[in-house]
Image (cartoon, rainbow, N blue to C red; front, side, top):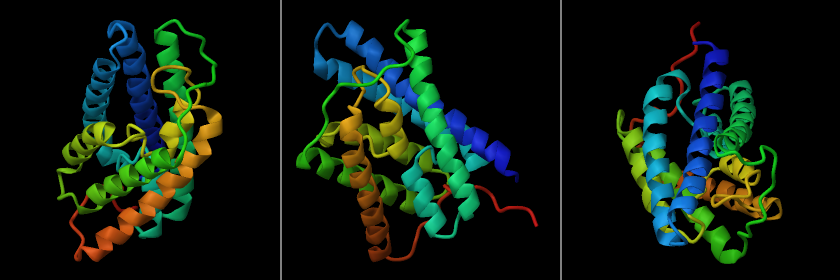
Length: 226
């Protein structure tokens, strides 16, 4: 397996995920007539469906991380070479930006913009830590072949049981701060979310270890030949 296809899969997958999150948020806000619950439901469903499809289709190429927190955990666990991890993160961040811009282009909005949507405070940070801890726990313990379904279901649920609507992904924060839309986050609030997510990822790993023997999972790419 070569690193270039894997990084391309991470770039495309993250771009498609952010395009789905932001694009569906724009569409939902336009059609919901001010009903925020309906808009969030539409945004949730689009994200869940896109996430499942992307993990299933790109998982065999890169492991379908689409998330620097997941990549960091896999690198620390020895499932991903450090150089690959760095390349993955660069691809994910680039993909997140491209996904935001693509969504704007499709809805005839300014391509380059910054969000002014405030998402901050201890409750929001706690929500992001909880969301990311749960995500890593699901990934690390999901039986082989079931990661896509379980991750998609978890994220769908976490949209509704967390105060932050479960970003759970530093790349998602990066892309969403570039979109002054339903799914956006102010750049000033982004660092707090990222710190909370990384802390949550660490907590998820600790919980996984405390639960005992690891489950077989498929979040790392196939072995490197030779």
